[in-house]
Length: 374
Ligand SMILES: [Zn+2]
Image 1: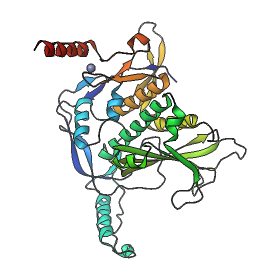
Image 2 (image 1 turned 120 degrees about the vertical axis):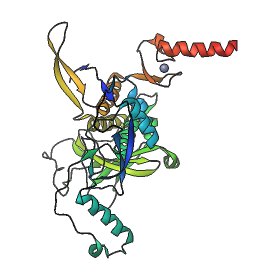
Image 3 (image 1 turned 180 degrees about the vertical axis):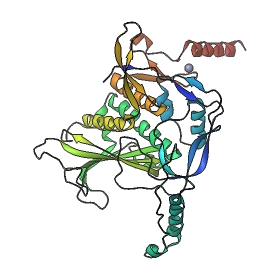
Image 4 (image 1 turned 30 degrees about the vertical axis):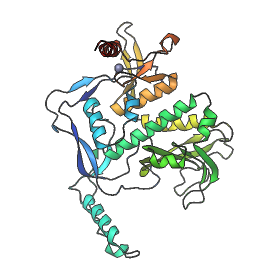
């Protein structure tokens, strides 16, 4: 893996963005490295982010994100206004987007009718009163939906919190409050053993008032499931196949679900921080994959090709920032003056640094002096 990160620049439409209502998710919003366990079509319509000038005429504003931008993103409250404000500053997320139905698509109408029928149906009657299924193929259509933004924020929030806990003085004690155990079965399917449930907000009472919360089930997938995909090819394999089921909530309201699969090489018995590290990596990887390219670029000094990682979107760049922070054990602090997150230099002399820049330090100094002389 390359150690070099190419400088990333991203464009913002200076005329701004807005949420356009009336889109319909064809598939639950999820990261590119995840799978769906079942088809889960979001109910109702969702807003999608659109540029104020859809034909992209006129100049864009280009910028390079600060290395702490991912933290600002993870602090968004998820309201439409806050997200538009973020987009107006930093542009669209620019990832693969979410699959939505076009309004002109007969499938859009079909799902709308289904929901209407569902609302009015008496139990058992639904079969007869359901609408007729279109015989056309769905019109491929992607957009950045409000749910897609929520899913990224909520996952990033959880990963930052996990990493902060792992780096704290007593990670095992702190992490332990977020886990509940084990060998429990969830839902109706008793074949699949759940190893644990992780909750990003520890206490039930706090979860009800938390802005974001995420549940992660580790399901033991040694037993083959219906499609046989998860059965282990090697019965003597010391590891086991797992899948993380990630459920995301905003203000205690469930909005998203996805699944990450992998091979776990330890029994998850002793070290909870080791376990958490694996989970954190799996979630970060799912959000990074396909969003960062690797390319050989010619170093102008040596004339030699050098391998670089290059984010292909703002969302990819922010997940790469998080991955780098995990990799380098980086410290971030919020500027006392402008509230931007900035990276603390590893040397100790800087540990008490309060401002992101000389400009912010000077501004704060002037404000203080103004207060004294007034
Ligand atoms: Zn500042």
